[in-house]
Length: 563
Image (cartoon, rainbow, N blue to C red; front, top):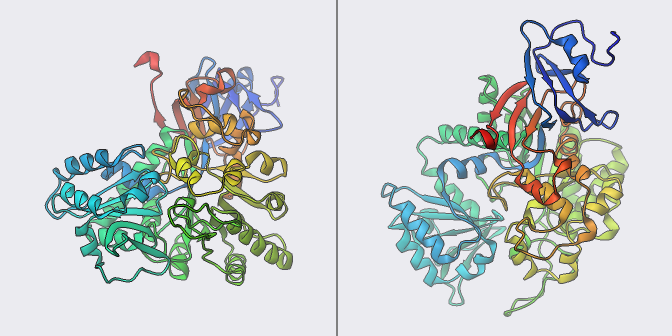
């Protein structure tokens, strides 16, 4: 020890950050001025004066002149391959684009491709899906594609719009029956429209995947692009919400070559998914578990309980709204309680957590019932998360904490996405008005862990929009008025927790990252302004100037006055 206090170590550091306003996310010491890093790990946190003791001839010293530093963000729900593919290879479509805009973009994009190449892109707004179920629009899509197959994804990723060439390559014709768990949408005359729901999308994705000549190289580029984007927004750890074999292999290759710039927790699907085709269940788990990494952790399975409210496939306790001849219904649960209990028991046996896709209050309740039964019999065990906790019955709020089930929150889905508009057309108003109950979950002791679900719902994995809307419950666009369930607003500090230590804990990294504390990985970011010193309406515009992962600079942007 020295007279200078808490920053004491006998050896010189690799990196010292000084002159900063550091939000540590450590309840025992929320603020500091300096960080000391050796071998990628924080060895001391404290004052500028004490940091001097750790500066040697080879120490890199970063003077920040009062800039705000905080822990690297943890992304609780992202799809690395799909997001990276969209950014690196695919036609960008805005969810606010109308049909004419979409077709113009398809026509321009297809003109750059070879005669047999697929036009793949997104994201279509969910509000378009019902309108697109019309053969007139299918013919227009055929013309825009110029004879090429076209596959467009919507913002929920539970629906697709394909053209006639794509349907032919899928082997789908007028007499083709709907696949189990999916639907080839037909018009009133029974003719195909090119709109696909749920597991029908898997058939389209499989046909596109079969056309790729170098799928491994594409996957590696997509994953690397996704990680680069995450770093640019200050994200240093992420849970990949649907990890297929090729994505896992690409992540492990990046780790082996020293190119991985974030920790990634993998979530392997236990049943076929509409998002990507490939090995699932025991076969996939066996392959992945045979090759664990230090930074890439195969720690979760992924279980889909239902669909999405826009297509009335979310499982609700009360019926959907009825209009235009729709029949009353509450959606469909894809699992029985007994089957789900068996899956939860299997998680205990394998030592794997589970991320449950449950978008309705009925599906949320089913997960809690299954976990309750197994926890009662076996006691504490694997980590469990429920995504996306949009609709939760009030009686089930307190059960999250009691069962140690994390709420995998998706603040990006309500603002600025157009998904909310589509949801309001299907779901009863009282349920919508009570949606996204983050305040109640926190007050009941639950872990609320934010995730973008990129590229589903979100055009980018930008966390700062979600952080702001968790506090304001309003659209960041000042020209759009109104709010959603204002009583569920969080404080800024609580929202920061939802993007740092909470998702780190939920995905099993709570003792590694998410805080700036001695013994934790040196995952931290430098911001262009102090979050606590700007109006909350400016948080969505936050820019990350530097991102450090394990003490290594992995992203750098010059301040605006230097550009």
